[in-house]
Length: 175
Image (cartoon, rainbow, N blue to C red; front, side):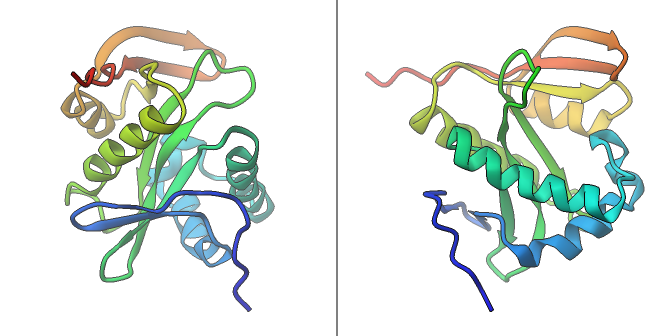
């Protein structure tokens, strides 16, 4: 049985992707990602219930704040990852974040989706530019942040790890 989520989560469409609300059917791919080496940069290695709670947390984020991670589908229907703006308790400010599942990196999907998610955030929520926390060893995400126009603002060295903080550009002012 498929349940239609009653939250007003926009559907965004790019040239190759659909950014949509999370669904229960996303869970198996999220479990696989969590168990892959790629998840080390986003707190991977959780048990099954931890991944489930993270999935539900994203839905709750949408309900509470009106934004969160979009699930990314190619127009062919492949679920390839998640991109969106998140702002968890204890964080300094909202973060534009992304992760792609194994086999889908290197196609420009994260860039395409991040541009769309950031524009949606600016249009609906705030014109304040978000940040991206990026593990200092995650060179691919660092390259993507730079491609998105983000600039290294500072480096954090704390009990959570060593992260670069990139500041995304403010939205262009429409004349």
